[in-house]
Amino acid sequence: QVQLVQSGAEVKKPGASVKVSCKASGYSSISYGMHWVRQAPGQRPEWMGWINAGNDNTKYSQKFQGRVTITRDRPANTIYMELSSLRSEDTAVYYCARPAYGSGNDWFDPWGQGTLVTVSS
Amino acid sequence: DIQMTQSPSSLSASVGDRVTITCRASQSISSYLNWYQQKPGRAPKLLIYGAVSLQSGVPSRFRGGGSGTDFTLTISSLQPEDFATYYCQQSYSTPITFGRGTRLEIK
Image (cartoon, rainbow over all chains, first blue to last red; front, top):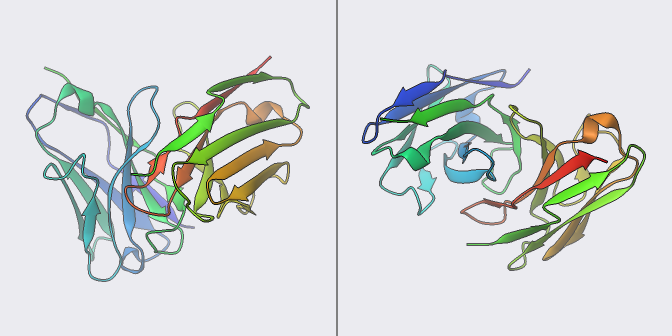
């Protein structure tokens, strides 16, 4: 059974960084990319970026360019998303989501359960 | 960036009703349009992919239509578990973008 399990909730101060993990099970994450999406309270989901299969190339939304880094730990079958220079507007639930067949044009399925990141002084 | 305009933003309906949600892309996205259902505190759940294909396990009362720039999600006979928020998503190009959502409420 394909499953994505994310790390737990985080509380961070403005200016800090957060690193969220997404452990894949039931398949090899090397064969698929992974997207990261965040959703602020009451807002639509917002795509942050993705890491592709094979060569681990990344592509980020211009909005987060320079602040977000997506990496993969192949032996651990885990993908990470790190967001730096946090501000209050970054308070949101962060999701990892797999492209269904590994392509950047695929729909997202499955999704992780989400990780709440709260940024507060 | 491709803008996704979804309407209505909210909708009140009764069990057994037929409802349609629309989504318009700011440029042609072929059939790279997906629909998700989200319930409070949960991750979005895929319903329809490629504009018209029903995800495995999703009831057949959900139907997707359209191509190019105009798309629809129709629920033919609402069930109590269908009251949720629905999002369209384009996966034609990055940045991948979502509609603002349609909150479906019980009348």
